[in-house]
Length: 135
Image 1 (tube, one colour):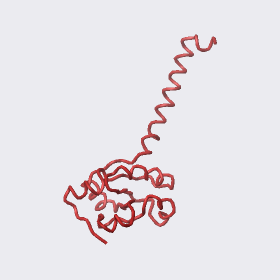
Image 2 (cartoon, helix red, strand yellow):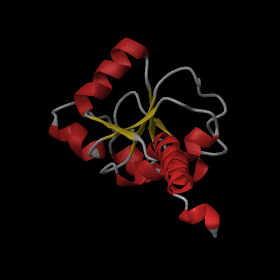
Image 3 (cartoon, rainbow, N blue to C red):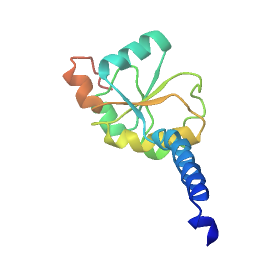
């Protein structure tokens, strides 16, 4: 009890707890994907050979997708990404961007470090006037 009543010890305890919290925040922010706009996606493709992964079901993908995107449905991410280069940026695409956020953690667990989400998904891509393709 004397430990907590001493002002110096209490100050040290607060500093230690705050330091731990500050170290934790960078890791927490990596769980969600970085959101990037459709125009930033185009730049990533052109400048860094980014890989687009469309996590929607095959039927949705066939109805319309970004021309360079690979279709790997979210439920298959863990088993079907072994051939994807880990040294290139990965951009995850879905209809609106919400479902893609969930898939980022799966990709990071597999060793992908540069993972982003197309903000607004395929809807935002089309609104930006960028091309889509049907399969």
